[in-house]
Amino acid sequence: MSRFMTIDNGKQWMDTNGQPIRAHGGGFLFDNGFYYWFGENRTGGRKVSCYRSADLTEWEWRGDVLTLESEAEPIYYRTSLEMNPFSTENGANIERPKVLFNAKTGKYVMWMHWENGRDYKDARCAVATSDTVDGAYTYRGSFNPIGHMSRDCTLFQDDDGTAYFISAARDNADLLVYRLSDDYLSIDELVRTLWPGQYREAPAVVKHHGLYYLISSACTGWLPNQGTYAYADSLTGRWSPLYPLGDATTYDTQPTFILPIAGSKTTSYLYIGDRWDPSDYHRSTYAFLKLDIPEDRVMKLEWADQLALDLETGETETKRLEKGEAAVRIRHAGTLKYAAAVGKSVIGATLSYGADEQKWLLEHTKDGYMRLRNAASGLYLAGDETNAAAVLSRGEEHGCIDWRIEEAGNGLSQIIHRVTLQALTWTGMDDRIALTLSGADVSGPEQRKKLNRRLCLLSPVF
Image (cartoon, rainbow, N blue to C red; front, top):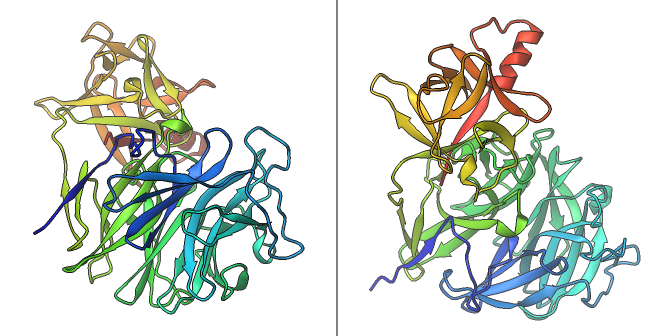
């Protein structure tokens, strides 16, 4: 009999103690009947926390397995054991920890991204080991692999037990693939450079029916962007081009892991993503989504408010909940600021998923135009014809509230005012929104610059 367990996406998840799960940039390992989740925790000093679950819905905190006080033992004499080089309160940055079990040595081996806690100039990888999956890990030090920078990273273990470390190098311009030593403690060889100059980060790898798939994101900090996937017959061979995955913001997430669920009927794959909140790191959440890998190699990722899993059979079910009016956020393509209502003005603000001031409800008119009503104030985005400014209005007192969305390519749009035929434009040092002409010739450098100030991304609120 099928037994589906349901995961609710878009919410703050709690562990079995009622505390928020702190395991961002995480990696997963199935071991002795449990799924173990390792991730970065920035509360009370930076550390790696570990949770475990038998059903992927109820997560038990197993402890902080790597901290500033962890025992240290170098791999080699030139491996740095620094965990707090500047004696700061929080210590070094430890990001994207991933763990593999080495059957030859009987050790659990963790690799991660290491920075000094003050800036991101060191760009090292780091290693830790433990005799038990959720026990105290011994810190084995940080280093630059074969002299290269190493930032966002992942681990992958092939069917023959060979392990690979993949990390962003050259200021994130390249993804480098390293084969690890037999004990997984050091780099054996750099075997492949992936998509040079394409600036990819947040890699995750899975093998399906003999093919290797890698997903990643672009480099926009904690702001979401269009995810991509690629595939290859060999991890060290030639890879396909990058293809889009999900929507323009990967449903407001960034990839961190691909988790296979092998059941009696099928093997399903879960996309594990972080929903980073740039306005408050501690309000960042997670999403577990179904990742489809058809035989035509066209990987598919769709949003689901709820994901139901039967771990025995491997089957999944997805559900989108009815939320009433559709809502979007408006992000400027240049400054990456979000349109936010403040009083009766509209300004550019840092993304905050909890801010209703940044959510705009869509209303369609009978004659094909659109109205944008702010979720916090209930006021409409309007065009003030006198001052050529974008304002908030209850109706017609500050000008027409009807707009037309004009696609501009690459997922971007212009928002054109119905009466003035001017476009919503980002101007000024404070990123305030104003109206400017949209129909001018864009062939010259100055006109092209004006066009860039008008381009924006309308991303659905999930």
